[in-house]
Length: 451
Image (cartoon, rainbow, N blue to C red):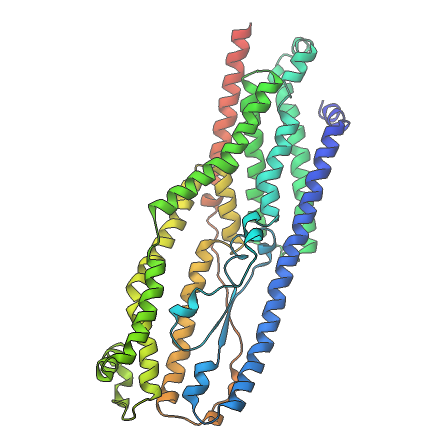
């Protein structure tokens, strides 16, 4: 029976065309992912080269004062891109993976990003996750919506039912055949992804494969449920397209609007204002008040005392630091709100397989909001480390040439993601089982009523 149904299915021109289109879109998405990863690698190489040239050039022109030199010098921190980022680009096309910072105030630099074409950002990337979440379900719907209704409308279902002790088994076998073909197509794309994107064969790739397969099985469960109502083909198609629109477009939009309104971030503007005012107003304040606040933050530097000159680098960098300190409260509030957004979206996604799949793929690919927030925390630690290293040299007016500037290369941040297999897989498995059991019960109920 299996081979007979498979041959019949593969002889359909619609099946061949549908598989070819999705396969072509999937291959295109892999090359878009490779292009994205190549851009990341090229940016890293440029950054490494630029930093060395940048430091050498500034050391050459600013040898008199190390404080003036460090006003200009930037030190770079890179958020490492995992190869799976080529499958799920996530927010990596919006949030810069490379930050070049001076030791001046951090808040004014922390939220800088690259310039992008707004139209491109609106359209988004045709990455593999897009093909998986939006296009594969349409293929599954096209394969399955008339699985039972076509047989009934053609008058062949009664004959099949009369020759079988369990007609439902025939329907299930048809779904299994289609699911097998679609999953083989998915695995073919993932095999190509391993070759094109040089994906390592590790637990993260295994998680991506399992998440993707479960997502496709979820849509077959949705189709099974729709078929179980035993409606005509047009009604099934309308129900399934409506389900696709609800699950991929409408519900995610509603969730996004709810989260952004539930956790607004007015602190973003307040942070910028506080940082700028906190720094600029220090020019007109009593210097002793500025230094007292600075030494309260860094008591280890109190030994440098009060600057005797009208203008000094000690006082200047104290002002820079206090600009960050004045924005500290709003910065913490904004960070907490963003974490609340991420946690809320993860919780809601448990009940929406489309959101759950996207969230989990972004998480293991290190391309989601949580990765960016952790990168910003690493950025703050990196900036503080550079400050604590250079502040004593600035305050003591150390000679520029006494420092080995070649040792300051690009530093890297790499997030270590721990996979909680229950959290990753169980929500999808539960939803699939609920839909399958519901469909089975519903089919038998409708069949009894029909008799």
